[in-house]
Image (cartoon, rainbow, N blue to C red; front, side, top):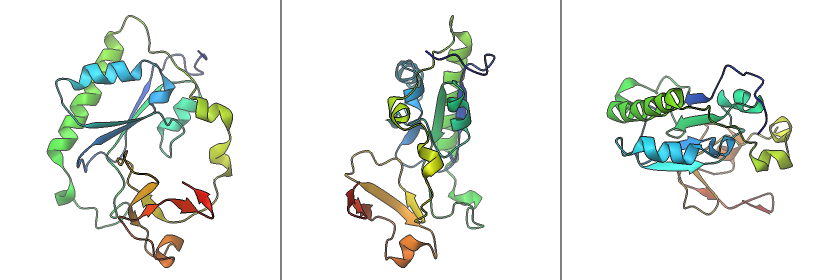
Length: 186
């Protein structure tokens, strides 16, 4: 266990784009503590959400800063959509009941952390140990919007593509599954 550079911070719970719950809530960052799975399973019993659990820790979200400093993270996410950062992302498209369920689950997780005798332990996720500067070298832009909740797909299922982006110009569209890129299997 690596000591946190923020000793007063036990964990970072991040709710990012949780307003459009469809089938599953994606919980990312489980690789940052070996205790997350048990905690989530226990706290989800009264809520009953269908969950997709992912170990990924170095995410394109605010939680990654905490992870890189030795703080366990748990990021809740309902997936990207074609209205992201657009005026077409309007209130009637939100799933208010789903957002309330997500809030309840994350509140129960937070309560569990506060009530625990010991702080949740941090662990370095092995994928990042192999290549700790992975995010620093990512410079390619395709304009794809992955469907993050798809866990039974071989490849990357696209929720949509950004208008005018290279992916759209190449003919990709929402619902496509990328299985190979530049000769490399996905």
